[in-house]
Image (cartoon, rainbow, N blue to C red):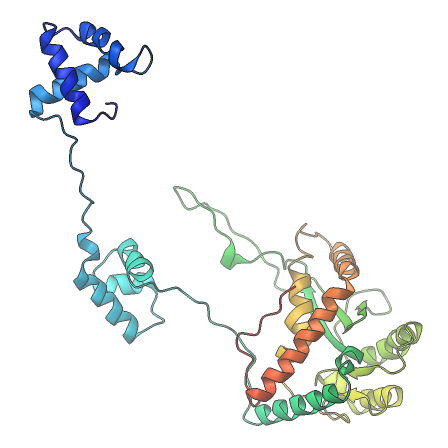
Length: 361
């Protein structure tokens, strides 16, 4: 029924009985009040009369808010107590323990208690001696930055990463909605095809990618001989071509990096401007949170290179090469600025994990 005021409905009733219960005459009589096109329709007139004669009222039905007995004060308090006892309990287990439905428990948590679910942040394990080492490194880095605010722009950060061919699949985020469970499985190879890529990142660009291959052109992992071959035959000419004679070189403590032969080679090339385990400047172990390749580059690349689901290693490597070439210098400058901020945070936290440090493009 059209929304009418009680006075308008009363007028309809009066006209109805004055015109010998004729809906048609009421419709005609309302023309002088509402005009040709705005008067109540004949069905509206009939519904108004029917409401009066059956319910004895011309007022709208009262529609109070639906009660929520499941979200009672008692249940809200029970959920709140449950959260205080165990913040990590799942909604499903919590609802089963409290005798509430999953939906009710979720609504109480979100709407009544205003809580949110947060994922655990995975961080690298730190040994007892790691935090003092991280603190000392941050002090050294900040002192160098105080002497030269552009010092961090002259560090070539280096690392390797593995990219598997099936890396675009994440079974934890893959869902298939339907009325029945589909008979669908995904087969994963026991030893997935992968490529190992090395990159060097500094404020002015990225040197790489370099893909480790054997003499037959097959992809291989890194060992000491291959690492030193990459340094001698590829990295040194790349550095010379970019006129980076004053560059500092950083590497982590992987065995192939810090072997006696590898360190001798790096010392001949970089002298005292070498940041490494067993090097002139000690790189703190288990500190991927302060390596730009770990906290930025590898994650950024992996979010890009699997978009078109490469079917071969060659296609995957082509994607990696293309995406690295597309990274602009201003973005790398912001990465290094973020590294400076991490050094300050690392000092203030005395070498603890960098919680809440987020890189923004």
